[in-house]
Length: 103
Image (cartoon, rainbow, N blue to C red; front, side):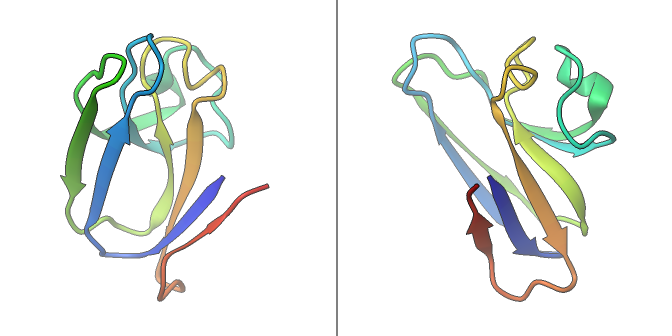
C-alpha cells in the first residue's frame, strides 16, 4: 500500500491492534525500498513512534508538519516490518489531496 499526502501537513495516526501479539507503529524516513533488516532502525531513521499496543488495544498520535520525503509506516517490533508489516508513506510538494494506492 502506498499512501500519498501533501508536504507540511499534520497527520493523525490511529492504530488498533487486532492480533494477540504486541505491535507498534513508527514513521521512518527510510534508506531502502523495502525493509531489509529485522531491526527496523537499520533501514532508516525512526522519526516518530507510537506506544506498544497489546491485542484489542488502540493508540493515537499526531505528527506535525511532515516534510516531503519517502517514509514507511511500519511496526518497529523486531522482525515485524521485515516480515511485511509496513506501508509506504510518500509526502510530496506535488500532492494536493491525500490518496491511497493498493496493489
